[in-house]
Length: 92
Image 1 (cartoon, rainbow, N blue to C red):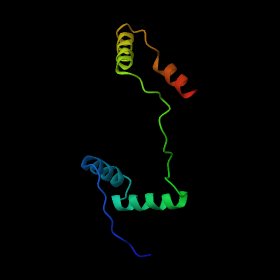
Image 2: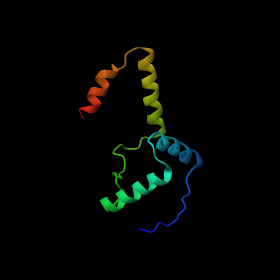
Image 3: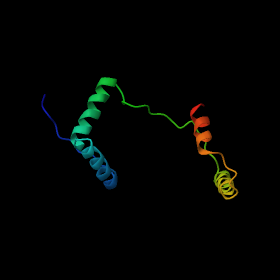
């Protein structure tokens, strides 16, 4: 099948990091883009879910209060044990 040339505009740092990761996987950026394009054709859409986060937006005031509470819990050593936290998080 004939090949065509195309161009992309990416953030420089993103491209650099992507190339490093892909090199560690034994492929170059062009091969990865070809795999992505093939998957789009095979899936007849993006090969991953595209969705909005299920988390509601909170105000800056609410965010600051949550951070302050977290810092207080750490300072007072009254937080939740990480193992319990992640078990509860993963069981939802």
